[in-house]
Length: 210
Ligand SMILES: Nc1ncnc2c1ncn2[C@@H]1O[C@H](COP(=O)(O)OP(=O)(O)OP(=O)(O)O)[C@@H](O)[C@H]1O
Ligand SMILES: [Mg+2]
Image 1 (tube, rainbow, N blue to C red):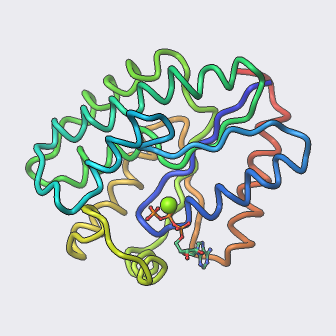
Image 2 (image 1 turned 180 degrees about the vertical axis):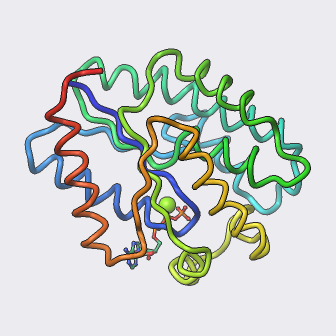
């Protein structure tokens, strides 16, 4: 009964805090849980995270970014997610390939990579170990900005408002292209969003193994 749930969405939408609460609730419900984040959660993945998010890295070609994020993901899937699923654990991930479709494809204006190619690359990286569901935590760019306002900004967060508007629109577009994606209104209170996620996860845990 192995499941892999991804929480994705713009910076500040609530992925980390909702994933943390979801993992706590799943553990209290008796599940063994693996909580991972992208890029990261492997030694190579964390090193790539440092490189990819540091403002000191400067501009990278979209194809460079796509391949580096995908490299981190390939390590994570092969070394952490697939083994955890084989052990029957529930995997909860912060971000996944929907991020790559958006940030290196749809939100990248004229430099964006073809979305079909990014989906193909992502399928290759996952090698059959696809998520059970991808929850897009949808919030307006303004609300996301307010929620992340207290923090130091990374290389992506520091971009201008029109970029964040393209990211939000890109996520909504990508979610409509991706059958595994479900759009969750994340503008409500933390508790409301968590209840929506728990309800969806409960029904997916009870359903047939895909
Ligand atoms: N529904 C909510 N209502 C109000 N505040 C929220 C809600 N969800 C999350 N927050 C708060 O918003 C801030 C950003 O949330 P969080 O760090 O979980 O976002 P994130 O999606 O993980 O961001 P990033 O992509 O930058 O890692 C946190 O301070 C969190 O407590
Ligand atoms: Mg986070």
